[in-house]
Image 1: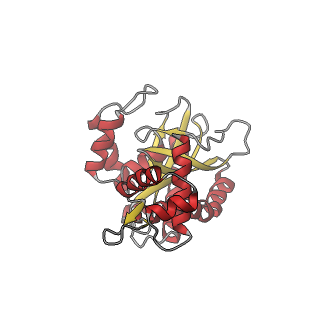
Image 2 (image 1 turned 90 degrees about the vertical axis):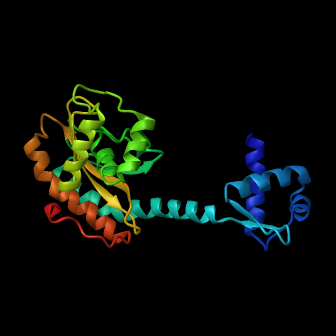
Image 3 (image 1 turned 180 degrees about the vertical axis):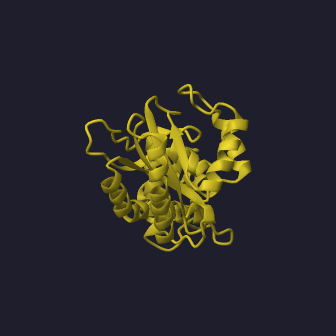
Length: 256
């Protein structure tokens, strides 16, 4: 399997360096069996990673690579663009700031600035977490279409982590309505005991939610009053990051 992936990458590299090529040319230039090249190319075509001209029988790179490239570029862009806003929140509140993206119906933590306090939330870069019980996850989930939310719940379920975890679709729907109205989500010890977080969504240039940021810290220090004090700043940062990514939407008046 690994060898097949390596061959596929060789073929993609070859297609990127010249005009459309046929199976024979690719096999000869790469020193690979024609049968292997053909099989790999047809698989790549089925996934839209390569395209085949039915008149000439030659192959070229497919549109799926553009989508993947845009995703990779967006990932790089959001870290660069979000950095000063994460720093600003960290300096103002001295709590840990996280940046996450939606990936495979979960949140993936891609950046973090830790609080300087002795008692703090630590970096979780590279870790995944559920959507229904984290502030970043709920901030993303709430701004997905209702049908998509139902699909995610059906696929992932609503696993319970603490006594406060949302465990029913009805309660989740009520929470989603609140988040959509106020523009931010709160994790009130729903994923981890003694941890409170406030998160806000980030939108791409097409207006789709794809990321979120949050402030998090010990519940003993981050009372609900303090969480609500931090929320407008988190929302503002999320909106500014979205605008710098090309979002042209307008927040609801209740977000301001």
